[in-house]
Structure formats: C-alpha cells, structure tokens
Image (cartoon, rainbow, N blue to C red; front, top):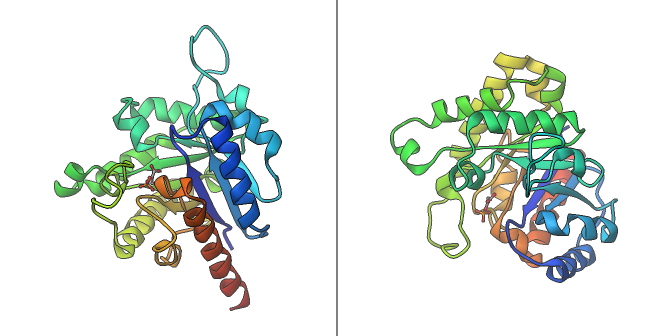
Length: 265
Ligand code: PEP
C-alpha cells in the first residue's frame, strides 16, 4: 500500500515567529500515524529554525525550490546540497515557478536530478493552464512535463518519487480563494491514470505501481475526502488551506480515517 502524503505549501507566507506558531498549533492537533506522512514546505528562511522545533515522528520538511548546481558563484541561490540534511522533499516545477518565474522544462529536469543526487525526494508538479485545457492540450502538456522532468532518472528512482497533478486553473492564488474553477474527482482520476500509464510505458509496471501521485488545486478540509478517495490519488498538496491549522489538520485527520478504513478492509 502506498503511504498517503499531505504536503502543505506555505508559499511566500509567514515569517519565523508566525511559522513557529503555526507549527505549534499543528503539533497540538496532529497525531503520529505510520501510514500517513505529513510534510510542511515553509519558506527557505524558516526551514532551519523549524527543523529544530519539529517533531520528526509527525512531520517532515520540504523546500519549495532550490538551485540545480551544487556550489559556486550564484549570488542569491541556495543549492539542494545545502538543504540535504534539512529536508526530505523538494517541490519542483510548481506552476508558479513555471509561469511566474519562467522556469523551462530543462531547468526543472536539472532540479529533479539535483534533488535526487542530494538524496532529497522530488515532488514534481505538473499541470495544464486554462488555455491549454480549452485547446484540448492537457494530455500533451502533462506528457511533456512528466517525460522531460523524469528524463535523467532510473526506474528505481522514479518509483520513489512523487508527482503532483496541479491544474493551474484550479489553483487558488490567495485573494481569489473562493472564485475559481474546481477540478472534479473524475477529472483528477483520469489524469492520475494517464500519468501512471506514461510512467509504466517509460519505466515499467513496478515504478508505475510505486510512484505516488498527489492532487493539488484548492484542496481543503471539506473536499479532502473526495480527492483522497479518488482512485490513483495518494495524497494532497494544499496551498491556501495549509496556512489554516483547522483546515490542514482536518485534511490530515481525513487521511488517517481513510487509511484506517483501507487497512481494516
Ligand atoms: C498550490 O499552489 O500548490 C496549491 C495547490 O494552492 P491552493 O491549494 O491554494 O490552490
């Protein structure tokens, strides 16, 4: 059975004391569970202080980004090498990195490789924009993002990785939280199947069976059950909802409940 993974992407929110307070509140509400992994992705600035405060039996840390070269004259950058003892996971290819910062496919491929080289598990985000969806290009876009993102990887490495399907049109940008399109579980199921099929063709059935696929895009405590019950989906990557401890701990509790039901079945 694949472990459920709930990853909170705090984006560029919360200074050190705010982040510490949120972690404290989550700690009070979240229990240890063997089959559910809870990952927090705060800003780079607070990874270090949170790593000291965190209960490692409950939480793991992820970086939201890093530089693909291990060391050198790259003013302002932080490498995966510098983060290797601090984080378990790295969010790579988030739509904001792709579209706001213009990160191209080959840079994302190099970041995936750098994370793996430094023993950090990539959470490779893929997803189509609204324009691409309307033009009927969803599968082509996802195929290109998956194939290029994983192109330097072996089947063994892919098996351990995480892919997050995040349709750009379903991601809340904070201020428009209540006013955008929501992906249906049926749409998400179709895409998860398509991604797993792509991985099977490229890396074989074992990698396809083991790779975890998350959904991200306006997920919250209310819709977590529907997405987590979607065949082929192994977890969630909330942005906005991860900043609210009621919402985020509610999502984790839903994951606990579903995992317990699966074990008992
Ligand atoms: C995200 O940015 O990864 C995300 C899914 O954001 P939100 O949950 O706010 O839509």
